[in-house]
Length: 99
Image (cartoon, rainbow, N blue to C red; front, top):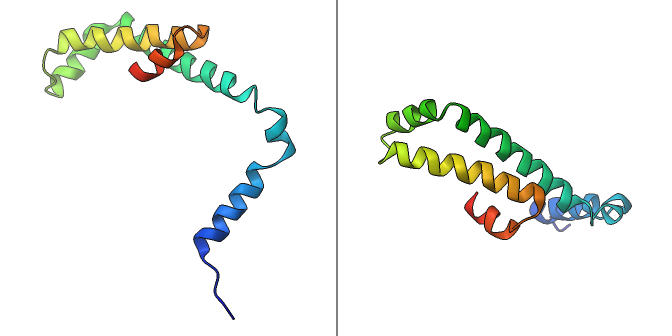
């Protein structure tokens, strides 16, 4: 009797699960839904930093990040504007790279 490779069995099982009719039906919509969800998360977190950027700057200071005031604004704007870009579909490739 030949023992099977457990990793190969798990890969085969995962491939069976991923090759269902529902995956084929929604394959065009899935990237849009994912882009909207991730964009919304970044918008919410970016906005929360805009509201209280001093608190975020304090956290960066406590982590010994150099130039915490500058990088607090950089991170805040990248999260907020990158999230908006993802939701609107504007320069999504660059927004995703920055995020």
